[in-house]
View 1: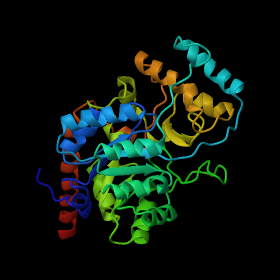
View 2: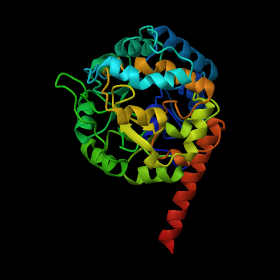
View 3: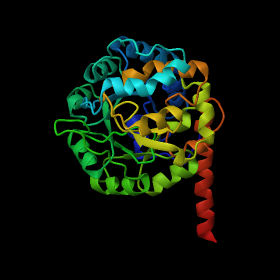
Length: 369
């Protein structure tokens, strides 16, 4: 694919296009989607949160079968647990009507333990991935990543976090603008100093500040609200060398997102999303629906990051299987309304490139008038 979008990030990561798949855990980020984005010229990135070491190794092997030349990345969530802010009995009572609608018992079953973030990162490096992306402070995996000759790409939500990431050896940083779907990557939420409010600086304000702070030798990847070629061109104009997209790929054929999930996105304007910790115990941007609104409005607190998600895990599975978008917890950014119908990830990448090149041509034409 011939394109004028080549940037230094492409040379750093060994990719043709400065387009990264955001690490989407718990279903959407399948090996097929990761491989498809890589084959299309970008960087496919796994979301490893909640996986066992064995399942991550299996998924990496599958992606390598589909895209033997790679490269791939793995995102590990290093966020520490957070303390409970509510009582289990009260939260279970809020969820009970939804569980019964789905034919689930009032109390969820225990889930098998996931691999530790450090163990997942080490397994990914042993499997030969070339990028470790991180959620929260990257220090716990920085040394192992650099020793393996891989690139460290931390997710950052503030200028201070970007500077700290570079000090840890980051080859590039991924900004998470306030518009982004998914869990907020703000360092230290629930850490040793207790819970803090998540950073929600918008992409258009965050990217140029981070670019200036880290300097010209550290590529910045923009994430948050970018859904089409216009967004890519805007990010490049702000000084970014690439983009990270999650919500845009939820409706790809290779995505593990349920049809009800993918089908709900085009009808979801930005104001129908909300950042709340009520679903999983850590602030994240969710599509507002009956379940999310009930948890938010109940003000029942949570069992904390690491525990609260267990209360909704089987709801998530059952609602997806039953096509219940009104009950299904759905992470998505404020650009969800720009989603399209199901189509191959390669077609999405190709369209992004065409749109970006058309936007650049239009800008050049305007300048010459």
